[in-house]
Length: 135
Ligand code: AMP
Ligand code: ZN
Image (cartoon, rainbow, N blue to C red; front, side, top):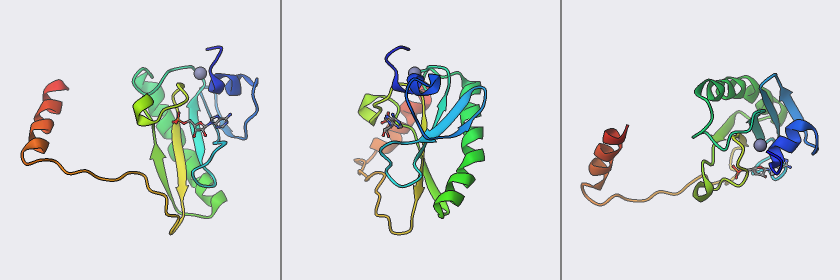
């Protein structure tokens, strides 16, 4: 993908602070971190997001996430992180090349992931049935 920033990073056309690389996956620090140590785990092959990424590659992304998260935590001196995927533009995806966000969390950092809404009576059960029927 010629115009994909992450493909350019992976190909070495753009710089990054790389923290991990294997034959299929690369991880580098996010240039606009929500917290220090915010890291992106990225397949080298171009896929848009988790909806079109092959299942085995998604599994490998998770394996790498589990492998390097302790190193990110050790380097940042904390014990917790959020794992995030913005899947699609309305979900906040800006770079359309599959990636996981590992976002270290610090006691009292005040970072809010999401709020909450309330279902009308019966709405939750109805939605649950609709999801089950669509699987
Ligand atoms: P998303 O909203 O899930 O598509 O996230 C894209 C992420 O890529 C954002 O958190 C950006 O800060 C990050 N980003 C964009 N350009 C670069 C870059 N050149 N190097 C590192 N991270 C980047
Ligand atoms: Zn790409």
